[in-house]
Length: 476
Image 1 (spheres, one colour):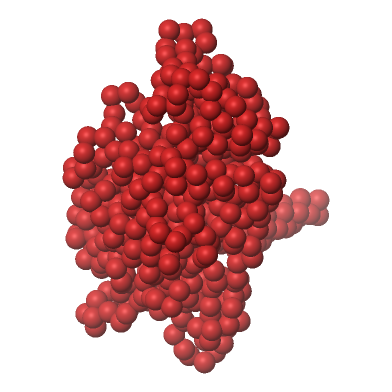
Image 2 (cartoon, helix red, strand yellow):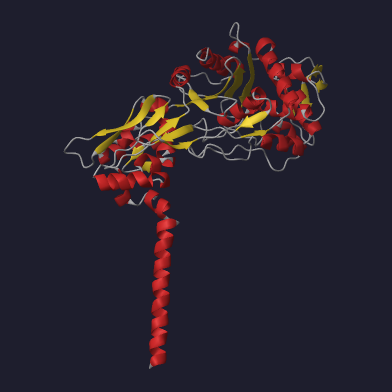
């Protein structure tokens, strides 16, 4: 009898221990995930009765919470100033569809439930005060955001403006856009209608073309190829074969130049100015796939950045035969990059060869204005100082004497690279332009794709470069 009691006692003790262990695991390891789970309506309802913190662009409030109507189901209503212009930064905060972008990634700070806010929660509880969330301060410059938004009107595309020294994102615009206020409404029927309209729109207004989509970068990728060549013994004056067209090895496909490159030899610098396809196809073949891949990775290809926005990972193919290598060297085949990625490539040349990791949130402030989080700059060496200097000079040549004359601003040193690419021979072109301006140093990446209000085809020099010029003028 005593033996049976001991067995029952042991089993009971094991079960109690397992229950306690599971509760501990749920409260420590899975608390955040469970609270953030879209199906957790109780947690979401509790959040809607909290004064959610602001999201700011500098000192400008771009997302806020205001008192709801007394007859409303919730105490506070989320509102977005200039909603469409900032939508791909703030995201939305919705009872029906949860949240996205900064609203999602910084949710625990915004509702006051992060680990660093535990003391404030205790003080609020003991004093009977209503809980209040922290404010998230982004790196966005409101003036540059407005200039980018204005410059992109009439186009479908994206603009990314970046501080090359810190990695701070100064502007991020994607068009067409949407109004997050429609998804933040407490009228659930109206929210569902708005959601259906937005996700089914052929123009893709909820797509963040600046960071969350990747496209063939076209000739802007020649910056990566040129940098790889300079890092491996080439100079800006090295002569490169530039026939009017080149046959891809083992195929019947001919790759032509899109501009008159002389049909002989040109220097690496001149090949970049004229964006000679055959020169860079030959150059990529000479440098080799492994070297190009390593160089692309040093610029951030294959790595994740801006987790607060869920940015897409840019891609350089893992395996290439000779024809694929030559096409990849002009930014085609399976090379794919976001405008953010190409801004990062350009930024390294301005920053002495160092790649500063991009970031969007500068700091998080508690309601009493104490700092709960502050970003620290992180960087890595992507190319040598001498290569960065040579690339800057060659890119200035592209604007002064090459395909990017449409980006010139009198009295301002500007370097750039145009790009025109296609994802399918039967699809319209994508237009690219990446640029930097000096004093103050700033980097801009422009990506354009066809919309109902644009011509059948867009071009890097004729369309994207003038758009970038408008943004660069706003930095003066």
